[in-house]
Length: 107
Image (cartoon, rainbow, N blue to C red):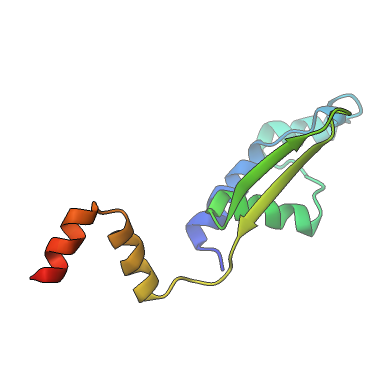
C-alpha cells in the first residue's frame, strides 16, 4: 500500500509534529524526550492513516467547507487500487496536445 520511502516521510513528519496543548503540562522527562526526538504522539490509527494517505499522495483534498459557525469540513478523495499499465499509458496520452495524439495514431 505505502512504499518504504512514504513511510519514512511520515515518520519524519510525525517526529517534527508538536501539540501546542501539551507544552503547558510537560514533565522534565517529556521535554528532554522532545529535544532528543523521542516524543510520544497520541494519534488514533485512523488519524495516522489519513496522514499517511496525504503524505504518500493516495489521498487528495477535493474540497474544503467552512461554515458560518467556523466549523471546517475537508473532503478527501483517493483510491487504493493501483493503476494498470493501460491506465498509465492513457494518462500520459491525456497530457499531450490533441494534434500530436492524432499524428501518432495515423503513423
